[in-house]
Image 1 (cartoon, rainbow, N blue to C red):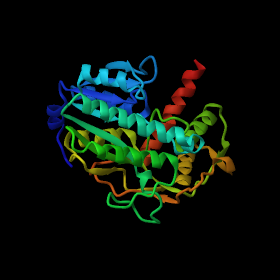
Image 2 (image 1 turned 90 degrees about the vertical axis):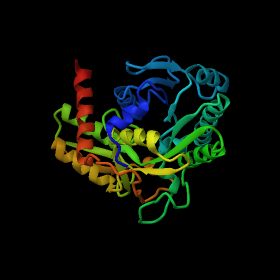
Image 3 (image 1 turned 135 degrees about the vertical axis):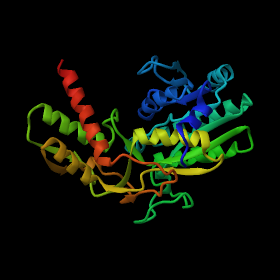
Image 4 (image 1 turned 30 degrees about the vertical axis):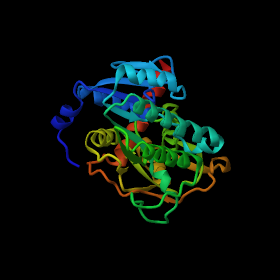
Amino acid sequence: MKISQRNIVSQLKGKSVLVTGANGFAAGHLIPRLLEFGAVVHGIDLHEGAKFQGYTYHCCNLFNINDLKAFIAQYRPSFVFHLASQSSVGTSWKREWRTIETNSKTTYNLLKSLEKASLQVRLLLVSSIEVYGDHGMRKATVSDDLRPANPYAVSKAMMEMIAHKFQNSSIEVVIARSSNHTGPGRSETFFEAYVAKQFAEAKNAGRDSITLSVGNVENIRDFSDVRDVVEKYILLACWGKAGKVYNVCSGVGTKLREIITMLEEFSKIAAHIDTDNSRLRKNDIAYLVGVTSVRFKNRPLSETINDLYKYFLDQCHFDKT
């Protein structure tokens, strides 16, 4: 899918675009790009204020369908990027029903509000390759059965099923099954950000070795740079086929231990790995990599992890001033 920047501008310039989960990680990279393409961006989230400026922010709870209907009726988006969700597999095991309820109910309320407004709208629904579950040591394709193995994956599969319920409406839904994506701004809740922060703090303190308390670092995952992922989201929102599912991933498997090795090289700090049983997950999948549906030149993972490490280094320096 090779689309010129001029064609994207022609789709987005002057259009009302809604981004849910506007204070989230991916939205922090997506919204500036939408603004560069000339979109009129409205972001909604639960917080009183926006994390950054340059667009119109609204505090709106997606659980409140009446407020959401009023919002949609007033701003009438032409495009919607539905990023809002509980996005951590680890957290989903601690809050199983809350994760399923949050991700499914907010998706239903959003689609129902758009349907009520009778809008001609394109909606990018962000799902996850976690919905595939365990298919052995091969890459998952969009034609594979869904075998969600954790509450987060179940919630994402439910979001997709809810979207299909609205297939005969004026809403054109494109589903993006995303792999792990990371980069500057990633929360330390996630493995690669957690270890990058540990290395940055050790570097800032002048240490030459650290001990990392981690789970299973032999698992293989598909990592993408968030800055590449949001470009793919924009392409799919503008040009993806309504009703179709796309894998948004790098197609490259990386053992979690390799990320630690990268950070050792960047920081010149040696790491001792200490397995923490509390970080081991139920129904853990040894290999989860996708066959990408969107051809795009991806940044090397080493560049992404180095940028993430530098982000946390900058945070350390900022905290000292």
